[in-house]
Length: 255
Image (cartoon, rainbow, N blue to C red; front, side, top):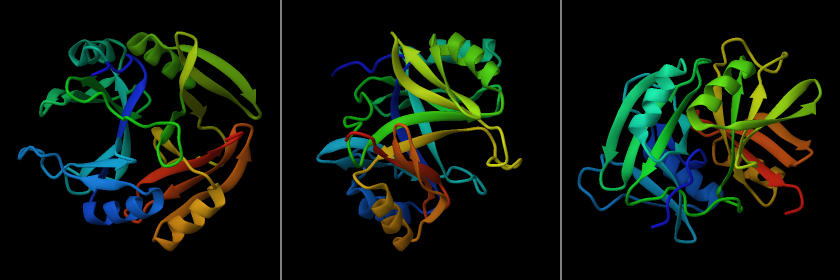
């Protein structure tokens, strides 16, 4: 087993009130196959794969009223040490480090701006085995009203460096590990961000055709939050699945 790189997004999973419906939706949309782990203590957690390689997970929401959401897991070599760093940097530990069968250890946090995220310390499972191809995760992006605070927090927790690029009217940030971009940050400024929308981590899945994927998603019962839009790096859209979890799809320029 290879070791997931520390500070690099390693996994995403979906918490949903309708697991069967989510399996149908994402299976049709991305060509994912769902299976449950062989262990009896998996609590109904589902592993999604594409081309026989793991791409994401899904499980039922743990409490009534919990909103459906995709969670970003960032790789760590020591979940317990990361939890201490989160607290010392001003974040909150929602779920302290816990064992996930024999696959690894996870923990769930919120940053000082209120965005939730998780970490993954691999043991028997590195994380996603397929990335940056159509039907797989290709980018993770923090949206926050406190970008300066986020830079300080994530720099302390993951030793991330930043590269800012003007993207009028905002400044877009790339998080860097060993000078390589591993994630991004979008400041929540302007009328496009309703006051009731909390800070969050967005997940992006690569697709061959953004417009066709949006059309397919709506036919499957999803809804469009941001219509297909051209960006310097490709054409993207923001969708909600039929259960209400939001995610983005992008046709990366040059692919």
